[in-house]
Amino acid sequence: MRNIPSWIRVPVVFFIIFGLTEYFIDSGDEPAFIAEPLVSLFLVLVFLILVAIEAIVGALDNVLYQSLDAEAKARYEAKRAAPPKFISWIKELYKKSLGQKPIEEEHDIILDHNYDGIKELDNDLPPWWLYGFYASIIFGFVYMAKYHIFNGPDQYQELEANIVQANIELEEYRKNAKNLVDFNTVTVLTDPADLASGKEIFELNCVACHAIDGGGGIGANLTDKYWILGGGINNVFKTVSEGGRDGKGMIAWNQNLSPAEIAQVSSYVLQFQGTTPEKPKASEGEIWVDESAASEEETEATDTIAPETIEVQTDSISTTEQ
Image (cartoon, rainbow, N blue to C red; front, side):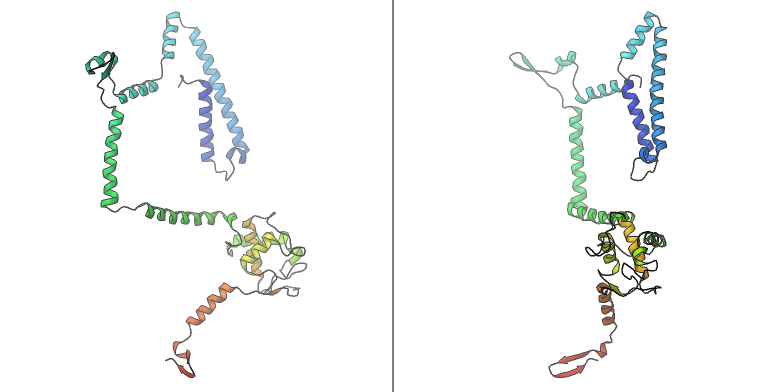
């Protein structure tokens, strides 16, 4: 470690500590040293301590060196100039991987060829090349057994499996990342915590126009079945987010509220449906019917009709199926 210069050693140790700090401290989307001022102070102290340690160790090393005699100084300098054991091991491993003979032994592998004084050596293939060749043969047999004998999944099957897994992970991510919601993907929130947040947002921003009980005032009555820009969670979300009619509707709240907050207040607004306000404003707009819910009800009603009551009209003869 002492063979590594201090200008490399200090930053490496500091960034290791910095990385561990970011890993163990949960600071959300922001770096820990920004979200937590104490972390910044801690990192500054760590850096100063590392610099101080290097300065102290360097001073002690210099004092001890000056106290040595000439012979001891020579031994110390020779040992200090020697490469680290790890570097020596890497160099030795590299030489072995080449599989070359030392120059003094090359006379044993010289061939009889002679091209204008240029002689040829009969070197063996490098060990790294041979090991790589053997590994490729083993890999080929394993690959053949897996995909041609045991019918392993091909690339198309793997792609389909990856897409399915990606969709699962995306849905899970969307559940936790509420701010990704828009008017196409929003659903009615029923969690009490979400409705409580929606109520707080409504009372802070909306009561001036819609009244505390949703009966309306400057804004529309939220308790009846009439809607100017459509009812349901999707339309309400869009209206809150993008605003009402140009020039005479409410402002767009997407600059002040996050998508998650808009979903919360939109879900709370729908809680007013069917309630009786103290001073209800006259209805505006048209009666809104949820087409998807209506189609589902029609399907259920059709499924419940008894077969024996279905009348079949054939030409001018009317019969009843039994």
